[in-house]
Image (tube, rainbow, N blue to C red):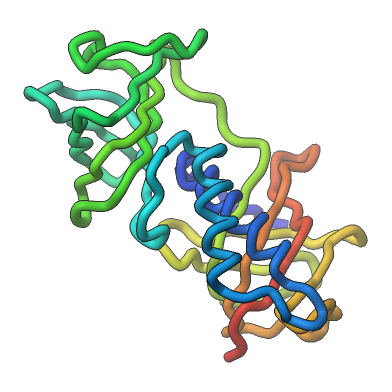
Length: 221
């Protein structure tokens, strides 16, 4: 069985993991938890997970993973799998060097360093950086994955998911332990159809594939 290669931003993983945890907590069978409380829980989780002190519009939170090509005043020019991106570093941004997580300033970021940059979108290829993690070595790929996307196809082993925020399709294998949910409560596997929008979490299995842990339907086709 052919299995696709998956490359997703680790920073976006952190943000979407926070989003998924909060949404999953909000999905009680009675659907009584209100949107305002869910939003506040999401902001609190993002503060812990991403390290951003002030969380505004969560839909604009983005992350880049790449290698520094240049440092121009208060901007890091980063190359990732999609090309060059700019990360603007404001006075309230935090930059740490890994390992150790010691605070550094932008002058200590070197060309060819690897970074994870998290913050708010300023356009297609620009980020207002709020937290930047810097390392001399490439970051290890994530062992957990969370995201939102549309089911493009289903076969006897896996879903193919098209991420809402773009990027490569994800092959998400289901197991006996996969849990299916909706805002109304639990679902069966047969209730998920191509065209449905889902929130998902997954872990890497022994074959280095993504095995779904939770698939939550958030919109029907």
